[in-house]
Image (cartoon, rainbow, N blue to C red; front, side):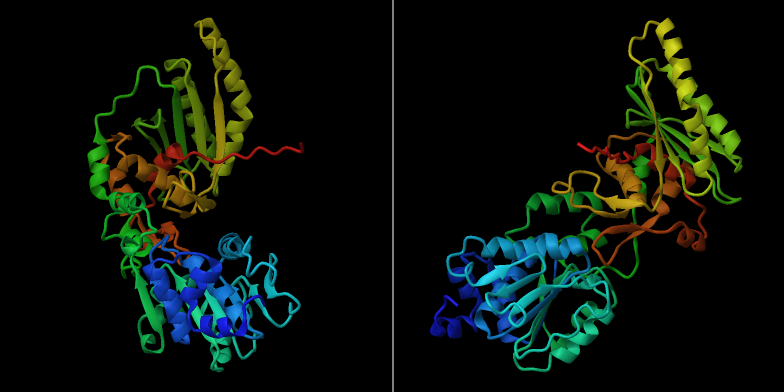
Length: 474
C-alpha cells in the first residue's frame, strides 16, 4: 500500500480528511456528516432527496475502507443493476482512475474492487438485491455493508447482515429516497431509530441540488405532494395517495375547443372496452393541442369498433388535407383484434386517400401510422432523462403523464365533459419503492366505486408518443 502505516492509522478514523487528501474530492457539509457518521457509528441510515451526492459518498466509503483496514470486505447492493453498476460502480472507477496514490494498489473490475495481490481476501463486491442470499457469507474482522436506495431492498436481504454485524469493526451504511412506509429502512428511522445514527438531508439544503429541479417539482406537483416529499425533502410519503391530475387543471383546460383549419397532425387514441360495464372510446387530438369530441361506444364488438375507426380516419383525411394521422390502439385484451383489422386495411386506406388528395392537388403523400400500445408496459421519462425529474414505473404513467404535463404547461384544450374531468382527476398515484411514479390500478379504482377511466385512457393514448426502435445489422 502506498500510504505509510502512520497515515493509515490516522485516516482510519478520519474519512473526511482521507477523501480530501487522498481521493482529492471536496465533500460538502452534508456529505461530511455522512462520512463522519460511518467512522463514529456501527449503523448509519440516511434518508434524503434526489441528487444530494449519496452515490459519491458511497464510493468514497468503499475506497476509504479498503485503504485503511486489513483484509476488509465491502459488500454493496442496490435494488437494480442500473443503480449498482451504472452509478455506484462507475463512481468508484471515476475516483480511482488517475489517482497517483491509489490506482496502483486498488484494482477495479466490473464486479469486484480489490487490493492488488489479495483478490479473494481484501475486496468490495457488487451484488444486486434480487435474491435473499445476496449478502450472505461475508465474514471478516472489518466489514462495511453499503446499501444503496435502501427503501427498495427487500427485508429478507437485510437478515444476513444483522448476523454479520457482530464484530467491532463492522459497519452498515444505507441511504436512499424514503419511498416506503414499511420495511427495514423505514424502521431504522422510526421504531428502531435508537440503534442507528440517522441523517435526514433535505435537497433544499444541498448545494448539489439544482434549484431548477426543485422548482419544477414544486410547480408540477406542489410542496404537499409525495413527489416533493420523497424526491426533494427526503421525507417518507403520506399514508394516503395523491390524485395524479388535479381537478382544477382539468376544469381550467375544459371549454370551447378551437380546432385549427389545417392541422399538421391528428392523433387518435382508441381505448377498447374490456368488460361489460366499460365503454370503448375513440378520441382525436389535433396538433397535440386541441381535443376533438370523443366517440363513445357501449359494446365490445371489435369488428364494429374497427369500422368506426376506419370511418373516422377517412373523414379526418378528407376534411384536413395534408394532415398526418397517428392511431394508437390499446392492445391489451380485445384491442389487439382492432389493431389487426386496422393493420390489414392500412394499405387500402392509404391508397384511397392518396388518390383523392392527388385529385385535389395535394402533392404530399398521405401518412397513416398505427401503433400497438399496452398499458403497463415499459416505463421511463417523458423527456430526456437528464432534463426530466419524473420517472414512471410503466407506460400507463407515461401515457397519463403526457396528459398531465400538457395540462400543467397549459398547451392542451379539452373537450368539455364532466365525466372526463372526473376520470382524469380521480386516479391516484404513489411513489413506489424504486422512487418512480406508479398509477393506481383500474381494479383498485373499481373497488373504490369508480368506473374504468375509458375517456381519460383514450385521451392518454392520443397524447402518448410511443417509442419505436429501428434495428440494423450494420
